[in-house]
Structures are given as C-alpha cells and as structure tokens.
Length: 90
Length: 239
Image (cartoon, rainbow over all chains, first blue to last red; front, side, top):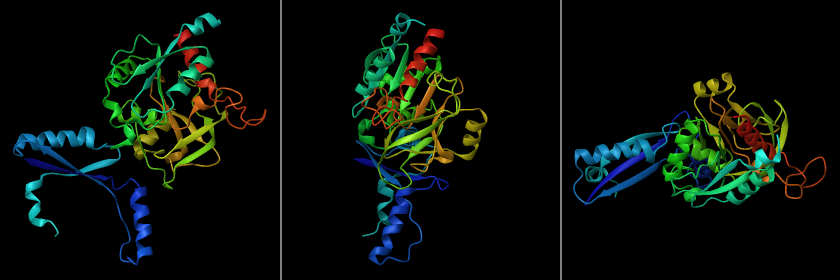
C-alpha cells in the first residue's frame, strides 16, 4: 500500500489566528525561544498500489482543488510518504 | 405589487448535513410573503425555484474548511449554474463560506481573530442597496441582526478588496465594532451582477417581533432582517 503526503499552510500574508494562539501559549510552559508559530495541515492519501507519477499528479490536483483553498492557503508539499521516512525524527 | 404575485415566488432553502438554520430561513421566506421550498444537498434538482438561500450552520462539521465539502454537493452544482444564469442566491454565514468555496464570491473566511465563537446583536451599514437581496433597504441604513460564528474573519488580497470597494460590491459593513477581524470591516459582499450575496450575520433570525434583536420598540422586537427576503421577492416580481 502506498501513501502520498500533502501539506498545506496558510499563506504568509494571511494572519494565522491559530498559530498566534500557539505562540502565545508557549512561554507559559517555559518555551521562550519561539517568536512565531504557524499552523498548517498534513493529509495522508492512501492508494492500494504503488505511488506512481500518475498518483502523485492526481494528489497534486486534489491538493489544489479540495485539500486547499488557494485564496488563503498554499500547497507546500506533495510527496511519496515512503521517501520521507529517512529524514523522520525518531 | 399584490400579495398574489409575492406568494407565487418559490424560494429554495438548501439543507446540508450539519445545517442549522434552514428552518429559520424557510420561516423568514414565509413571513416575507414567499413560498419556501426545501432542497436537499444530495439532489441536483432545484425543483424550479426562483431563488435559493444557503443557510447557516456547520455543514460537514466544518471539516477541512468551512463550506469546503458542501461546495461539491450535487445541489451546489445546480446552484452554481443557476447563479451564473442570474438566479438570486443568498449565502448566510456557513452559506457565505460555501459561496466563497464555490467561487461565486471572492475571498474566504478564516477563524475569528480573537479565536472565540462570537454571538451578538450586530449593527451593519447597508453599503449597496441595489442587489436582489438588499433593494428594500436604504443606502447607508443601519440594521441590527444577530451574528454568531467561529470562522467569520473575511479575508482577501488587497487587489480583490480594492476591486470590491471600487465596484460597489461591499454589501454590508460592520458598524461600531469589528467582531471578527474582517478586512475593512466587511460583513457581506455581492457579485458584480448583484444576484449573489453572502454575509456572515443572520438576517433570518430578525424577521418576527418577539423573536428578534433589541430594537427601538422594545426587547426582541427587531425585524431588520426581513428586508432581505422582501427584497428578493421584489426583485423577482420586477425581473
């Protein structure tokens, strides 16, 4: 089974109220290093077979039409999940 | 205009999974003198209605983005086609969010800047009194109707905002206080043709004395929202 990861972030020029709330809460726990936070979305799309270039292209189209709203969000990543595990944090 | 011509207007009210205010919207249509017609999201047949109201609520639980999934309902394909053909469409709150997701209106709604759900009686200024849904108001008139939302902050890029202002497409602006951080105090907008209007506050909750906001005549007597529904009936009679 293959999996495609799609990541969506609020556009830089759009104020992100949720990220603002997160960065406001961090110092209360002693995390004073962080001056900003932005909150986005990660989708994992599963396919029965392998992640082919066609599957990636379909995921890209789904990302642009349904998974994000281009007025307020950017699709920042569409990738085969199996290619990201090497960089994953334990 | 006679009661007979008004009663002949059939106004559809679409119910999505998670819609809350369809009954109130239908009641508002009836009190204005029209005939409400219940439409279901899964049905692409608009049953020959003369206009459509997309009511408020939390369709599909606001999953993904408010209005994002409803926008692909079969009923919405029909509404988008009809709206492009000139049929009056009003989107209230979640219905406004659906209209932006369907690209019938520009911009989008994000979470209120203060992150809290807001529920209050809100004063609005009528900035365009010539649309299908606002022609019974005076330009500059102040009306008070309820506002209740979580994702009510209207946003668009500066160019779009300038276009909306320049073309007179800001239909309503918040007065006194901006309750959600909306750009340029915008509460509602219209398309260029004036048949599609969307706003965050709820006119359908201010249509009957005894159940409306505070008004000069006493508590709960406000019926400032009724003008939306009498406006569309007038627009249909004159169409």
